[in-house]
Length: 188
Ligand code: SF4
Image (tube, rainbow, N blue to C red; front, side, top):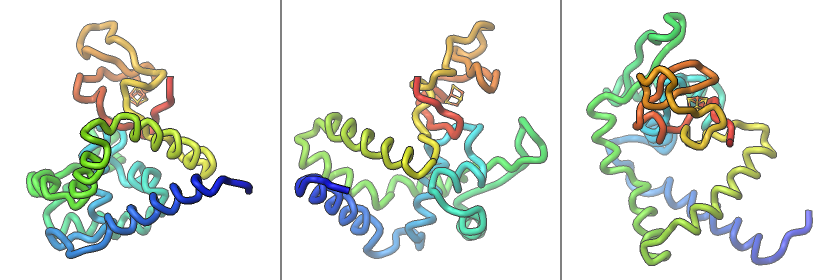
């Protein structure tokens, strides 16, 4: 594949930043995979907080994700219970300890670097990286995990219980739901 020198330089930078974000002294005794799981559970909607959803998001295997979740449960960062929609499924959630650990997420240091490098307006950088991510996800046959409010199934709630509504899963959605990522999301 022919790519420009500048495109290759950008790809190297993304790779290096990713590695640096995963190095350093472990905060709260959590490894990078465990931080990935906490971040996902904080951002995913109630239809997506499952072991399968986490595995799809990370492009990982169910077995690897299972080990990560067992460790997080034992440390008191994550809880699991039977899903309210389907009692045979498992619903994952952050405990209070898991949610407050994210206040010290090591990724915040990189976010601070992005803010400094972009002069406080990171929106153009985000749009560019989203385009790169979309292409990489398509090539790997993965799911986009976009934000709910940008999904083609997102509607106003016809019954007024929502205020929003998922036409695919036929469930009301709150304002908070509308900003979460979803395993079923399809770009409008
Ligand atoms: S509207 Fe789309 S993103 Fe939102 S819950 Fe439904 S399928 Fe998921």
